[in-house]
Length: 321
Image (tube, rainbow, N blue to C red; front, side, top):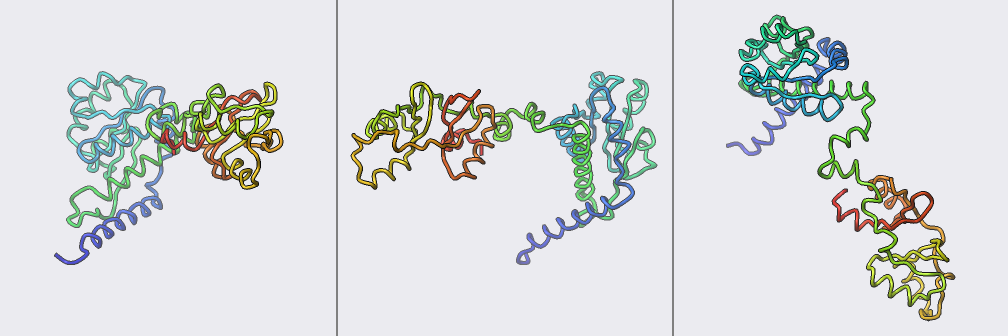
């Protein structure tokens, strides 16, 4: 085996697929206006179907459409032939993906699709194929060469089709005005879900559990309070109102002055200007604020009242970033 054959052949295949993507994007076949318009105006759901490698691509496109505001499902044509077609209604649409345009399982479905008066769209490499001819809208995806050196395994063609599906999903997303808030509703789980849904109030230490001292307390009093709560910061109140904060950093700076911690009152040393975040702000926004201002803790406020403390430690513990 020649040295570095894997690296060489892998890069060669990668570049072939990249060339085919660029070529398709510049070709007259890259015309999604009609298909996007039909899907946008579809009153029901969009069912994507395909066999083999095209089936895998269809499955992914269906998932992308669903997560970006276009209700969509993958349906295997063989299963559709044996009863699953019953879940598709007249108001729905079917997008068939087939390299040849002659996939038997999909071709066998066409009479039933016509009988139920369901709109059929397709993506194939042959405009004269059975599936293309039966479709209301068709997009031609034909590549000059597959990345497979034997020109057998669908590689470049599936990559272009997959990218085309992503492009259609994004175009529809834009047309629907689908926002990050909408995206969050369908992605509540995992790190991505947390980034889109977790608010400062969800992770903060509420004020009743935070280290809270009064302006009349001494630095010694504060040390005991902060040590007990283990938060590295204390909220300082005057009466019932929080007027400042005192952090570990503030404490270190004061100790360098050789002060008497049991005599110095907090009112003379607290920081009365401190960074706050709204309770309903996303945690990722709070983290960006911490990075910008080079702080590790933010005071959380709601309706102009201080309600808690949010620390970078809490954010990292929640595995949001």
